[in-house]
Length: 201
Ligand SMILES: O=C(O)[C@@H](CO)OP(=O)(O)O
Image (tube, rainbow, N blue to C red; front, side, top):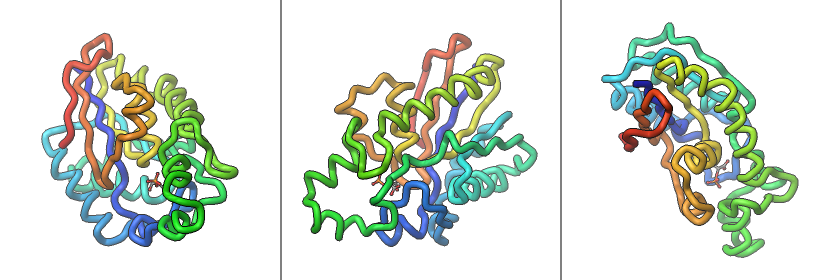
């Protein structure tokens, strides 16, 4: 039985500053590094065959810290643009609270969580989902079919989009889904890749 584990990167300096991040390439805070190590500790009973992350440094560093914590530094790592955070367009770098004061809570909620609402010059969650799911199907599913154990370290919105697909969530459910930094989700899969168990660690 293969298992698939999804982890959101640890807290970044932009998360701490309450700034829209998207494709900004920001580092982890000390707390974020601790969250990454803690995710590794939670995964101590797991052995991975393949690991995936985005090309953004907060995702790469989180994966590196998890594998170091697990003494599994030799697991092959694949870093891809396909697993980058949702592109937040003109909102990138803006403070979230100031943006609410300027445009109103309702508009900002739609930009942040609406499945088909694009932030100015940015991607909708739906578009993010298309690139993430297509990478998942082309690169990760073949590994899972071989019974390999896979770790994916990515971002809040990419993981919301992937979880919608894997868990069959409705639009309303994915719009309400929040994943904490360092959050760990485990899927135990049947040989046909149905989910036999899923849980947060
Ligand atoms: O800023 C971002 O890129 C994301 C994730 O940190 O934020 P939000 O919660 O608004 O999707």
